Length: 198
Image (cartoon, rainbow, N blue to C red; front, side, top):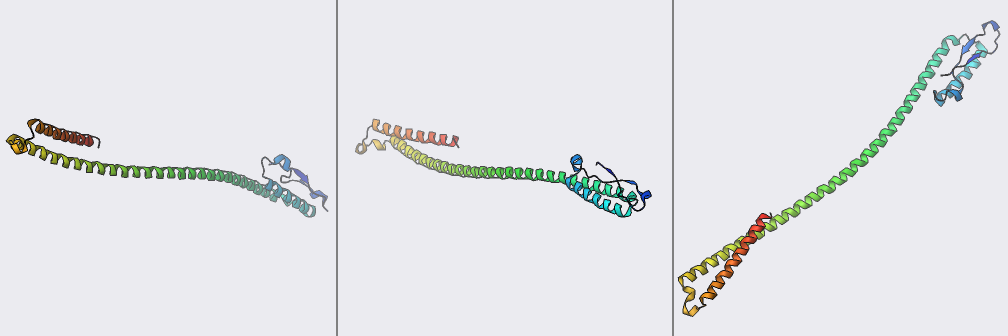
């Protein structure tokens, strides 16, 4: 702080006139070190002290002035600290707002991702059920066709389908048997392919 020295106004006892150390009043030179409010307060106190010196002289300032100066310096330090804390608080609030925005965005993205995963799981489950149902149907058809092939094979070998009244000819019987066999083989192959793709 900048301090100026002033002389008291003349009193009845000129021999008691002494110089005293006053508090800062030049706000233009100390504005970088002292806050404006503290400078204004110091100026007001200085003016009041000048009035008291005019009445009582300046002897009473010997113990009072150090206390006043110390109080003003402490007040200025507290004011500066308060300004720093206010600035830090503003920065913290800004960071908090940014983090909250990031959190909400991530939360929304995660919700969309979870919804998509659930939808894909449902689709896979439905597709799996469809494949299982088709596999069961193909296996049942294969069993039925296998029974038919076995029955036709047995009839062919014991000659029952080659009787005069049901004379289809050897070529026709073989053709029928071959067609059924191909169909069974195709179904078995489709079933195997379906099982491999699961």
